[in-house]
Image 1: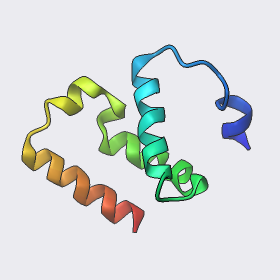
Image 2: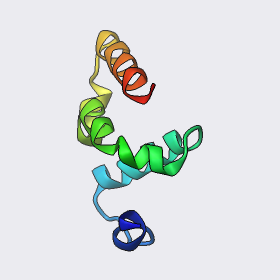
Image 3: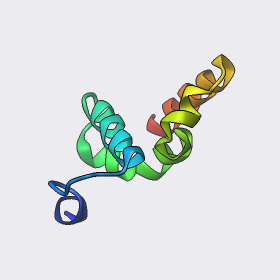
Image 4: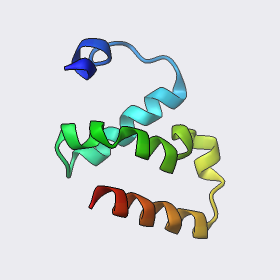
Amino acid sequence: MQYHDLEWGVPILESNRLFECFALEIFQASLNWLTVLQRRQALRIAFSEFDPLRLSSYSPDEIQQVIKDVCVKFS
């Protein structure tokens, strides 16, 4: 309800926030929305606050660590 009342339908102008919304929507494709929202903070940590520039500089080892961490947090 909080997401709906405070975020849904509100224009997003900041690129990191927009990237976060895209990423959350991707997770929602295989999980229910409540599950995604409940794990939102863990996703922010795993994905460097959804900073595309930081994420694009991840090494292959860092990418594998994120995948491992996210899989553990979502299981």
